[in-house]
Image (cartoon, rainbow, N blue to C red; front, side, top):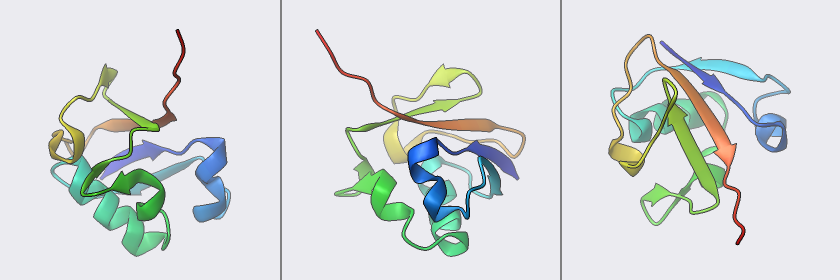
Length: 87
């Protein structure tokens, strides 16, 4: 199972846990498993079938650009981050 690091703003959905585990071969499947474990989390991460613009995803140290199709390995460490904008 991949380890998913949950940002502070979303921990109310994970009973305060900052790290959880989930199954999936890509980020979308991982989110499906997270939703099964923690109802309500999906709508915080996914919009119109893809990762919300306000969310960034890092998988094994690389910033994901493949959206919900970004590959995830069983040993992956996935960071869900609030996206930071600016100029």
